[in-house]
Length: 168
Image (cartoon, rainbow, N blue to C red; front, top):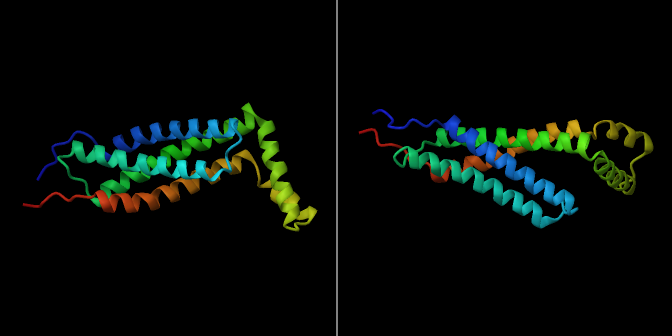
């Protein structure tokens, strides 16, 4: 049986990935400006927004596809949303800490040094770790962790929202 839809999982994933990425940038910017990045409520808000931006595109796809979506289609949408939004968030982190507010990155590095000292890290160890504590590494970390966490959440959301089209 043919699909009566003109919309693809890639189109839906890209659209919602861009919207989610921009939303995440706004949340990050507000939390940075308010110096609230480490507050538990902000972390919960980020998780809730991620879940919403994985549920919404899958529901949209189902609505455009006669109420049907396979598990694989849901996973495809979730993976694309996660990759696109993580890339946008990572680019924001890179640009913000490298070009817009490098002094904020220095503040983060100072706090990290303090925690390393409290943990008993030696000076030589701290210098080695500092070489890997850069906005570029933060970009890669945001990209990888965003994709992995997004795919894990997508597994759950796609399993719940899937509705297979009957074969007959």
